[in-house]
Amino acid sequence: MANIKSARKRARQSEEHRKRNASHLSAMRTAIKTLGKAVAAGDKAAATAALSRSMSTVDRTASKGVIHRNVAARAKRQLAHALKSLG
Image (cartoon, rainbow, N blue to C red; front, side, top):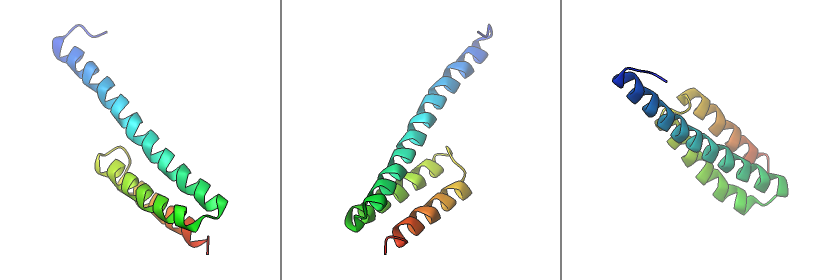
């Protein structure tokens, strides 16, 4: 553990940010998995609803800086393609 007051504060903040970032990333992954399950089941209505939620979650994660915007764009493209493959 750091001895300097500002270093202790920075360590505390880093831990809070790490937990928050992990939470956002986990929520994004869960939303993507939900869409994957709907596509695998062949349920187009559920997949369409899940696509909207997934894209919103991916955008939110990128806007907070947890993932890069290009990673978000690639994820959204893959999600749309998965829904489109449903027919």
